[in-house]
Amino acid sequence: MSALFALLDCNNFYVSCERVFNPELEGQPVVVLSNNDGCIIARSNEAKVLGLRMGEPYFRAKSLINRNRVRVFSSNYALYGDMSRRVMEEVGRLEPEVEVYSIDEAFIRLPAAKEEVLRITGGNIRASVRQHTGIPVSIGFGPTKTLAKIANRMAKKQPEHGGVFIILPESDIDSILKGVEAGEVWGIGSRSSRKLADCGIFTAYDLSRADETWVRKHLSITGLRTMHELQGISCFSLDEVPPPKHSIACSRSFGVLVTELQEMHEATASYVSRAAEKLRAQQLKAGCLTLYLTTNRFRTDQPQYANSRTITLPCPTADTAELIAQSMRCLKELFRSGYAYQKVGVVLCDLIPEHIHHQANLFIAPRRNRDNLHQALDRINHRWGRDTLQYGSAGLVKPWHHKQAMKSPSYTTNWHELPIVQAS
Amino acid sequence: MLKKDQYTCRDMRLFQFSVCPITRDDTSELILYSGAMNASLSPTLSAVYAFNRTNELKRPLFGCSVSAGFPSPADDYIEGRLDLNELMVANPGATFFVRVAGDSMLGVGIHHNDILVVDRSLDPISGKVVIAVVNGELTVKRLVKNGESVCLKAENPDYPDIHLAEGITCEIWGVVAYVVHAL
Image (tube, rainbow over all chains, first blue to last red; front, side, top):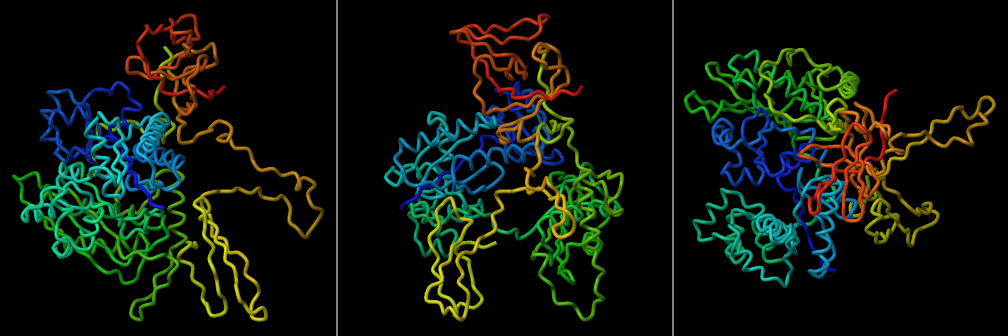
């Protein structure tokens, strides 16, 4: 039996989350900023109309924002994460085959059906998610995931479709694809799109009709699959179980630029601690550690420096102390004085399940097993809140800590920050 | 965890398995039939169950050990513990907690600073206490529909009701299911 795919995407998700608990934002231009209030990462439709761009640094957009009284929020991931869980739960209640693709997107697989039936199904899902969670969503149906993604884009861009757009094998797919730029196709990055444009491939339609050998050579096997998907041949299946993580990262921009090695030490130790905690929560250990640091590339008036270093750990580990010690080695090599750093990040990769025993190294004294210590550490921090107990190297004052000056309350995850309802 | 297409057996020579198709709703269970198997070599393997992590089933802890002493007469009657979530949260995904500011709903026992359990999956029918959006603010009122006219009623004579003029729509944010009030 042939199947269909649908992509459900929450409209301006972060902004919509803010609006659920703050209804006066309805109809007003709203933007949400990245960690550390660096740049714009979500915009309401009204903010898009004003010309505010995705990824634009906040300081550059500030005058436009002030002139138009745009409401600005720091990102509130506790809220967005909880609302995402609610949306996905509701979708899962309505449809049995769901792949949660990102914080605000989910693929659904359904049996093939007539357009009228799909329109009703799509309408029901939209209405139900909206009623239960308050979040507006758009749904695109297509014979493949790539086409479902394009259908979703049409549902968003053309409001006359009522938030549901359907591409069926018998639809006039070619004329739809002619209106989509090649760079906007799922999986085709901006770099590939430049390469494509050089060869006369500008639209999704051009890509669907390109020469297979050429695509295979220049865009790899994934590119070829994307091409087939545009032709209506399904190549990407539904991943109901998320694949195991290949890496765990933790990085944040600093609230103020950092110049001192001591403060870089603290920030690094703090991010490594967080990454190690994530590692243990998934019962993994890491074999490899990457540390990177960078200055603020938007401050063109200051000297620029960015560098990274990757080391293989002597023995795979999830031990915070060990990982901090290793990251300090990297930091010592990377750090150059005379620069104002904006960001440091750590990536743990080469992940393996913690129960797999590693061949002991003849030349290194075995470490004392501190599993119990870390279990206790994680349990205390889980119960009493993050950073209740931490390694001293992560610092106490944390002057580099990121800014979240305009964060909304954690409406759904903190008893002390519940939404207020008026009875007056 | 076993997955339907990833099952491996260490010594496949001893057994011939046929894996029966699994329905969409039942992916956690895997049934293997042992065919043409030498009975003297191995016991019959009838079913292998994969671990299903979707349903958490809490079991009560029994009050006495098995071998020593007289068993507790209550053991046969243990029925599990009571969970307030079970009572007050019918739809976890659609349930939100909000805090009350003001005393316009005193008449139905909603006090200043109480926590309301709001279930967005319930239909806002006439007579229900609801959270409505009034002038961009979340407001708690009783919804009274009378034919075409809609009224948001306060439950305290000191506060006026809000009559919605015909044609004016008002968003009902959710329906209040319970009040949590500290004495």
